[in-house]
Length: 494
Image (cartoon, rainbow, N blue to C red; front, side, top):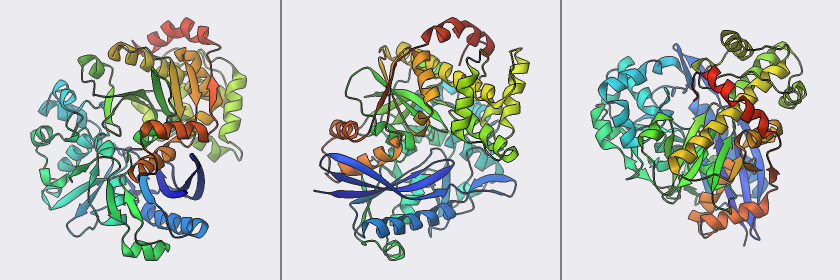
């Protein structure tokens, strides 16, 4: 029997609407609409134009109907973490939601640690300390607008808000809630003790639901606007894009790690329980929610963002500057033997990224070569070294040896980076599917609707549906020989 699902996958650069067809134990994907993730600068801040994104989604639904008819077995939305929309009692939004790259959270971590020690926070929520975590955003909200959180409002993270717009149901799906720094990874609910400690009103947090819960049918107005059957269900899929990506990992063996490669790189392991040990905090690992009670023990690394920013800068200066040309130039340039610390805050923010890379190399007395190929090679090798460190730390903290890395997401299309990752980690790497996030989004819907029996069955289906490419280490010696130099440049590692 054929089943059809709609998956919305929203990223920092773009969003898309994908129709997935399940037939004969295989899945085929059909992208029916793609759009820009609209952002806007307003009142001195950097924001998401969330209603523009919502309008694009309605266009996506209409495109799905045009190509595949009015009947679908489910709709699911995944997106990035931490950012939220403030909604009043009547369902109206109060202003543009802030973008995680807005500067209002500068210094908020230090303020938070004066209220509750870092160790206390980590022991309760187990989340990596990043200055844009929702906790720090809410503290910035209180500082800038002291009375706002006293109003009868609800905060809805991005996929939760879009689910609300589709169904009218205000819920917090757990995988996305776990990115806030305010969710308990053991109870899989809000960490009320921490919320009280930071004097955040309890009523602003909606009830938490597990991924796979049916939120309801689409609103009549949505059905009319898009031409869909009004009985079309909306599921709380794994709302955090990385959680969805991990669902798509076609892992049929043990001792594997995942790498979700895109604007951000998220590397980690799937576990049955959170790891809240001091070593995990020391190395800045995070415990985020997975499906079916699992925990994604992982590290957030900046990913291909510096490459994207380099390309954007050069594209403004040159007519032709695509990613494939930059990757070819980096490959032709050969080993960089110069590296950057990707956790340095300068690389998180938009701007003249090539100059930022060169400035870092000058500050650390490293060799510099002319041309875009060298700069891209520096970034890619630095990413590979970051993955190496993360895998070593995962093995130490978890006590498990990693033998295979499953890489999913758009970043795997950069085969130079994928090979460098295998070389740096010394692990075999299986790349695919590139559309991992939306595949996992659909997988949660398929399991929730009964179309697929369980997670292992879904992963077998994924393995049978997509071409996977294996990368074995071929130049591991380069990373072994230069690890000490890399560590010295970074001052002791990540």
